Image (tube, rainbow, N blue to C red):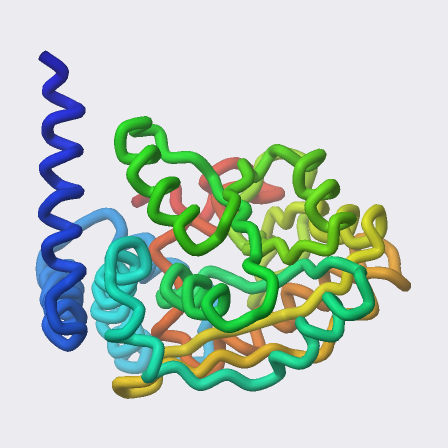
Length: 296
């Protein structure tokens, strides 16, 4: 008997049961989870605290502590939003979404260029991607990292494919290129730590290992690069598509990635509590692996 499969299937069954409840209840459960993460000492809390300390040195100790608390509560809400994205009913959340700049995506489709939908790891990301795919004319494909738990990965992949049409492993560059050249949109969220095919580019004035693939893909496919960002504002979500990043076609890799990281930083500063600070963004560092997290 495969106990790992039984445990995973049971956890997913409970998650599905929670996801179909009234959306306010689901989000409240996420808030509670975030509160518990704030109250109970844990490694992710320490990582988030270190990242906030590094990226917001202008904040006082009290301001950093407040941001950490709000970030962990928002992280819990983001977990709840992910459950809704996977297994919730769209009639319960789509009315609460507001979009701007959709014309940039539709123009890319009209010109038969394909579209790289570029963003960073904001807490509402999975739910926003589902909402976008329910709105744009061609459903975007999703570039994602596979979970180590293959049973859980099967559940997640099935849930994503219900609205994405296709999921692509983040290392499968050939399929990404083929999709873009076929006038598809591909969601690309490249702001996590990378240990291969990357260069160090400043992010909040910290050297961050930044993958070069978004620029290479844009230049090889000639696809339009459209940045998008989705934030939770009260009981609604606001999703903004910005003007295409022409620098990806016109400039070298390092300059393009500097523009990308600067754009991410500008957007994150609007709602810094909604960014994935619990991730070790600076794990790879010029002074050695885990240099900034060595004592955590």
